[in-house]
Image 1 (spheres, one colour):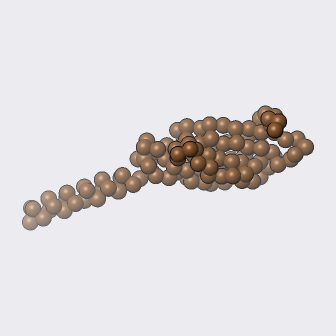
Image 2 (cartoon, rainbow, N blue to C red):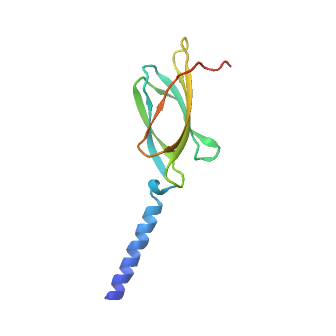
Length: 123
């Protein structure tokens, strides 16, 4: 009986260890974050996941209305945190404004605030 209990205990420890390895908080998973537009202007937002090779785009020109937010998933690194780069541009072409930002150490459930605080570069 004691051998069976020891074997069961070892099995439970092994299952717990395997379960922990798949947890996003412990690395190499996905994180759900919120992208918030705190302005009254509608913005077109693009977002790049810097934890993926070549900074893969996870949003392309996504419309986020004024004072609204959206939820997205990004990848977690080995420490369980995300790294992203974003760009934003106002929809209004007459008063066009742009913005961008780089954010490291993003945790699951975090809110990333996007804004358009500067003039857009001329193309």
